[in-house]
Length: 102
Image (tube, rainbow, N blue to C red):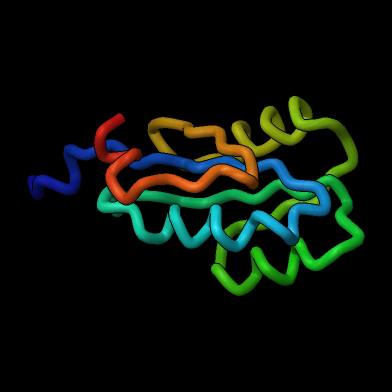
């Protein structure tokens, strides 16, 4: 068994709505993580700005739903493939080792 097979995967769930000002920096910080076993799920609450276009540039899984942040988190949690789940807000920017340190 390889070492990577023993390492848990992490699903990063980001609820968004009209987050074009902050989402790019958030996603960039996730893609720079030293921990590699990640999937990123963006759950958008029917944005009317460029939130979806920004998320698409990062090749993440995108869902669009109607509802509040809790609804978005629950929705994505049921579809996440990771062993662990990390919820982030779209205005959060992580240092490169945050997920590995957790």
